[in-house]
Length: 359
Image (cartoon, rainbow, N blue to C red; front, side, top):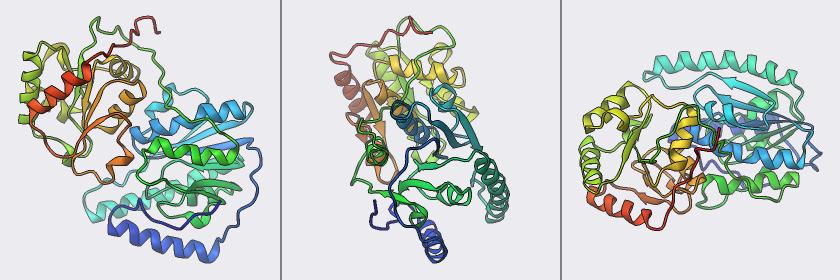
């Protein structure tokens, strides 16, 4: 299937320029023609994005396994995004890319890119040795791993042409307009004869005892500090929720987020920063009477568990990509009282899930 070439998810002019140059190079030396897909026997999935991206990508695994139960499935993932795969069923092999372009200086980024180039050669050899016959790119943003799959000589390569590399795909799917990420994967796997709608895998198995009364979850931190709301907002919201008699807990990770939560005034059991394993984190969110967050992964988990959800999308482009259906979204800093009223509205006629029987 062919589609119009687009670089829709190459955010920033530098990414668009680089993707354009690479596409031109690939078009000169790697022209691909579509052909009928064969039944996959060894399949490599790829999403080296963040935790939230990988969590959504796991949705295609169960449908693939049901359609092709004997197929060996590998998954290429980044070091920062691998945690959801620890409890995901159906994966036979995990390949880890440990590179991240997060240096602040230009010189630092150059050194990181050089390290990435070295690791890419190693990854190509590792992936090629597994003799995969089919590749599916599940990360629609720049940079993607399509060129790596081509270098590893995987003959059938599927993906979206939204972030460059489209000329290296043998089968390309269209990206819907203003669609939540999860809603676009069905068009991709349909090319392999899968008609069912993928859903996020949530393994509800906790490592430690869960609180008898599930608290409302507040998640105020992010790896991108520009997305965060002022501490004064959370401090006021926390006080107002307590005045309403609601049980509250903050989740997060790292020293900085722990200090933020402490500055709000939460302590003891109300501060669960760095105290929850991945399994426990999922269960706390899946039981929460409501989740209030700025973080995409906590939003995806709450949405998959069908929990009432309020999300803040500050300085985030294309929010429709990350906004789950049914979530109440704020694109500007709201009045805390407005959020309290929204929480109370979300709580109407909703019951929490009893997970005490899960282990």
